[in-house]
Amino acid sequence: MIGELHRVLRPGGYALLAFQIGDNTLHLDEAFGHEVSLDFHRLQPDAVVALLDDAGFDLTARLVRAPDSSSAAAKIPQGFLIARKPC
Image (cartoon, rainbow, N blue to C red; front, top):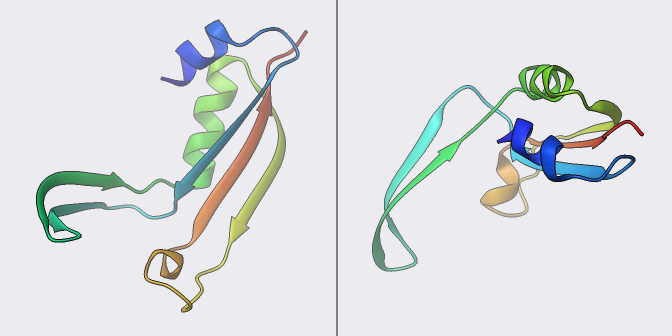
């Protein structure tokens, strides 16, 4: 997916990736009162940075947001990466 993003992005363009941090996959069979089959693939920032680098992107910003108990979704650390396709 990251290679395709690099292919279609114009030179000098930016990509923002946001993801939950972890090493596991969370599977849900029910959400908001409905039957679903939903997988959340959690990733490590260093692994995503390596994929960006392999695709030819330059990393310009990296943020890891610590867990926050204010909501269920915020309890999982979040990763945010900004990468730029060279000109």
